[in-house]
Image (cartoon, rainbow, N blue to C red):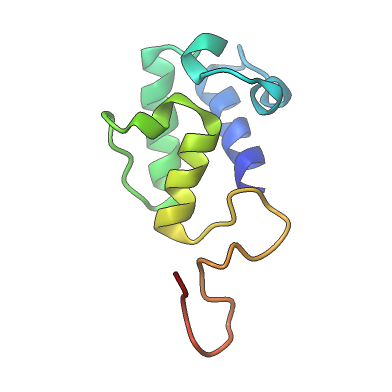
Length: 99
């Protein structure tokens, strides 16, 4: 779910130039797909607003969808790949988080 949502945000940040399905299917960096610096700024703003985590412009994780998803998952407990509990967030059971 997280990767899919991020792909939608990438598409929106690009002004629709990149389709979410293409972003998900790509085996290259976001800049190689055509995401420019202005679109990156839009994407960062949307990610910070939606997920409530800081995104550093110098973060190497910004180059790929998986890198960005990993960063968000590590800071919010979101499941990076979707389909269940990532093991990194409290699912309501006692014991809280595990590492």
